[in-house]
Image (cartoon, rainbow, N blue to C red):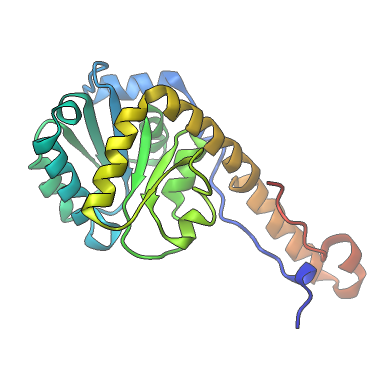
Length: 235
């Protein structure tokens, strides 16, 4: 077997100079899209608006909450960045859901700063979704389906966000909990999520890990002691 210290694990990373907390960008984004400051809670989603990304689940949960929960209907606004078949369905939910269409990277950085929490309702196990990393580097807590690729890497505890089973009932419960917790608790969770993001998921750390691997394999045994002993990311 290959010794554990000879196995190199390179984590995905996003540009920490682009995706970072910026109150001014967040306010400008809200003004541009006419987002009222009176909303108690702003949820955000980004990516392809297709079935396997969990949008049928999210649509139904939002639809039911708007009908059943007056506080949710009055206080929550959902921002949807992206394109796909479910964009039109989200528009049918009325003024509580704002479909923004696809956003460029600079716009996405402002988008994350305009929301209170990022939601990823994916229905399938997948690699580490960059939108989750962009959100936590921006200082936002995340809510996502309880799958191993997410709970084992990003939302490793309740101090960083919320998880739910891939059912409408479970998602509704999580959304209601977010509303009850309020912005103060979400800001604390966002700070914890950003600290983990800076420790593990920056583009700088990813590039350094690749560099170390290339130096390891470039000169064979000469570099074993210097570069070929894997250094686990700090936690």
